[in-house]
Image (cartoon, rainbow, N blue to C red; front, side):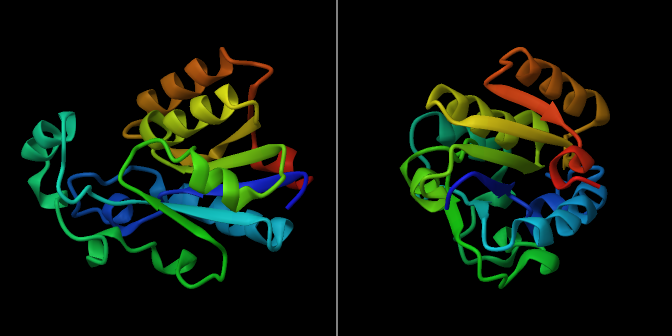
Length: 180
């Protein structure tokens, strides 16, 4: 893959289900924007998926003491992609970390020199992925209207923090990326 690749971070049941303790408000709005962007990227799309470590180690032990509901196997329906993004044929990078940037995602995007970052949550997994990718020398476009945070305020704070990394990270709107 050359040029831009759309990276869709953690659009999963655990964040999209209103009954989940990790429900992300505005998930549905971000999902709709991402779905509209998929056509523009064709095969240049990579999804990521958060799972619980088995077993948790280090600081993750106390983390899952606070969130025991999420300490389930990777194949638990809790960690499924939401229906709109299941079985798309695109690569899926699955990791037990907030940030998804690393060797697996680097390999999945091929020789692309820019990622278009979308997904949830802006203030956790998107932020962690953006900063690590920028540190690795990849240009990052964070699509504000294709992300959702734990709250509107947290979403905006994360966008503001990432904007401090310009020009490595640029905050954009979906229309800027797909030319609408």
